[in-house]
Length: 179
Image 1: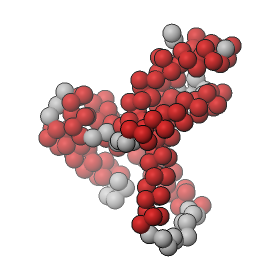
Image 2 (image 1 turned 180 degrees about the vertical axis):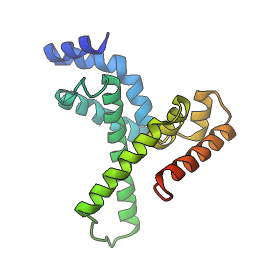
Image 3 (image 1 turned 45 degrees about the horizontal axis):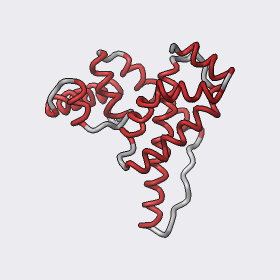
């Protein structure tokens, strides 16, 4: 079923549409969540949250901004990263009972962060398709080198070397400590 038909089904019959969406995109969502969260129980909990978020926030999806697959992937990835960060905060809190006050960005820091993000996105867009896939798999989806190498048909050493050269190139293009 194509994305348009799936969206129409979701609007007309949310239960049947959600079932069709999960049947079609469930493996992708599991893959994305599992790439970030290695613990099976964490991944299952997160997957449940992703399915609920998709159901509640489907009206936020805008086909003009990107494909349904890209939107679903972003929702799954961001939810998994939030789970990971929350778990790390809990572990850190248990290890260090005294907490420091939260740091909030100043407006200047927020603008600088946005500019760095835009520069990085432009630099990544200038990479070859293979290098982009490698970069996103490692640093966006947080996949292990062994998995990337196996799925992209290269040795681990070749993947590591290519990632090293990519980091060096981006560091040069972005002015040093940008990464």
